[in-house]
Length: 596
Image (cartoon, rainbow, N blue to C red):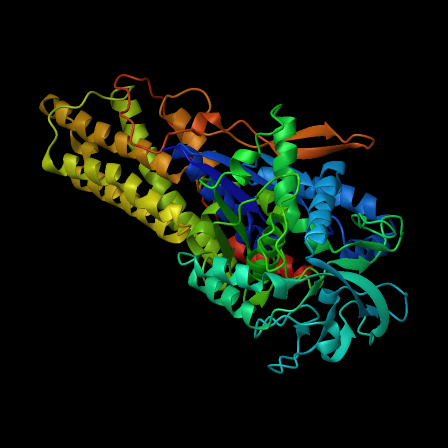
């Protein structure tokens, strides 16, 4: 049965280019999942965009001598180009500075307020003494009063997971310049999380199939729920849509309040751009639809607590009751798929300390599929992992080049040289049938793993089939079958190998879409195999053009199965699919890193 699958991908922040640690958390995993779901025959809506509001944008803009909008425009384009180059198959990648997003965010705020879940309170706000600018919670650091962790943030402690306020911190200091913040009284609207706690807890208790690290962390958050501020003293962001507030130039919605709403606003924008304005409802107002949210572990709080609470309050399902707003009853996340952190050469990624490699720099020197493979095979799926250049080179050379690339190259080369086409098989032996059965069965095994976002295991199963096929070729040695009496057997072996190559091409498509297209063509096929994202310019009403990522991915629909290859289809001698990396790249890249 065809299902509606929403892939909600974390919104990269537009205060600079993204590095490979970022895309290992939100980018590649979400794309592997979406490409598989399309191939399985499901209707996928993969959405995201650049997150462009908040104090960090203002701080970076000031450092670069530009306006906040100019900074967001610049890095929006950089990030769009990077994610398109990586092959991330968004149905729409947009931005939060659109009129559409403002309208959707304001509608959710107004309904939450009407239902009683936005409460006005006087609180203490942190101000930078040197600039007079508000310091956001995440830009204040100090010692956690609960566990004693010395680098807790003003919104939560990453060590114990507890929600905090900046005033809770012991010895608070600004992460921007180290100064001690000044706390002043200010009026703000707070999301009444305690009034939503019972509904939130009941929902979380049903999420039994989440990754254990995500579920445990999320359930622990329920122990100390407090109202959380959803407005800020800042002049850059979505205006507060209430009388007496909307014209206040220094009050805006909290960037994290509007950022998570982006999943909904992007879906609504996609529907409008598709010419079917109500099409988004099939994913958001349909109890049979499923939604999967992809991010790094530092964003779990906002996706397993804040966003579900916003949805529950919007739907009128908290302790205060209420009625849904104009969008109707909205479905909560099916699963929050969070990855751990990727480090680099044993160090935490840090742009300020130059421990970083940006996506665009990486793609300027290496193939996108090589990075995608490393992330899928060795990325931080369930635990922190380390990117090293030596391990990247080893996996590229030993697994992509010597494993998968070798199988493709020698199978097609021998068939092209000896037959010039996909050969006609004779009677299959037990060895032939066993390999073909193994390859065919992998679609069920690998598909079940991808369905549960177990990407490492899924890739491992596929590469196991590749290994079996390479062993089969070595055992059968068709290159030694030169007598006329051996031609039928040689052709049978080559046919078997090519069938497995075609199967593995499909199995590896979610991971390696670019090389899958090349192999599709090396096997004599024409046309698009799975579809690639495109950067398209669109016009904002009353504003300048901006780029979005969209694509036609219909070719991939319902291709998750073994397809009999066409006997007699012409084959030409192949070119290598993957590039072998020389030993010198390790020293060069480490030297480049240290030189920066």
